[in-house]
Length: 424
Image (cartoon, rainbow, N blue to C red; front, side, top):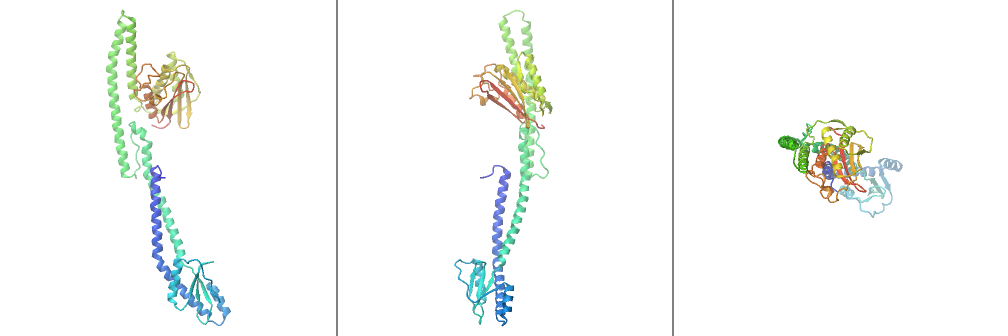
């Protein structure tokens, strides 16, 4: 199976290429040295046969047998048994070359217990001389194989290290992707990075800069829109207060509508101003959560905190305050008592879970929650812009986390805000 990661694919490609190169190299070495090794071995065997003939011609047979043993040469009065197994082609070629040099002699190759070339003794002897086939080819094969294997391992290790150095900047860019999408500058690439990777980092840096510029322009537009809209809204509110007489119900309805318009406008601005330009700092989440709950209680809402955890993370405090206020307001407006909140410590951050016992959300609607301007009216019919949970999701993503939404067993709803503690 093809590896999924680029480093794995590069290493697999290098291993395949080097293995093929090693096989070809071994074949070339063996092919190039075969003829030389064959001639050298045949010449050595020829000399050993001549030496054995000279020793056997010596009248002192005991001395001759001792010298033959020193040379590793055997002597038998009877011919060796015929071998049923076919000799290796290299041994057969050696025997053929020696027979060419000594045409008046008979030859046999026996492979057990060790490869041995048997040749008929020179007259007047009637026996057979056995000479071990100590071929240089085996030693050359092993030495060449070990050399090429060592070269393979060294080359593979160096190539794998280099491939890893190519992939490391890509991993750095992948880890920085959430920040790049939000307009953060790309991390600096190593000085020895490939030109293409440096160009990619520069291109991403330009894209992040464009994103920051667009975000600033959008904030300026919304700030101007907020100022221009809130001025007439304030005048309308003042005019309503100055109307002493009139239909109280109409005045009340107009006041509610104006308050809702102001709230919707504030949600639009909060959604765009997700904290990307806010400097980060170490934040005590427990203290931040207590402040948000105190604000809810001042509005007459009862909340229960189900933990006593104290977690500090590196985050953007104003953005987190908006996220917590949105989550608590969403549960209070669309859920039902008891309203609960819990702070949970995670290995690399924290989770804030906000729960209610309201009607929950239909299963087919649940995946859509958190999408900008989406409102689950079928389950939650209160007024709103559909940006509250979307704003929380953006702030969570900016902190390297996410927003999980789910129905509770036994009825109710739970929103889980996961935050990762990391330097922004």
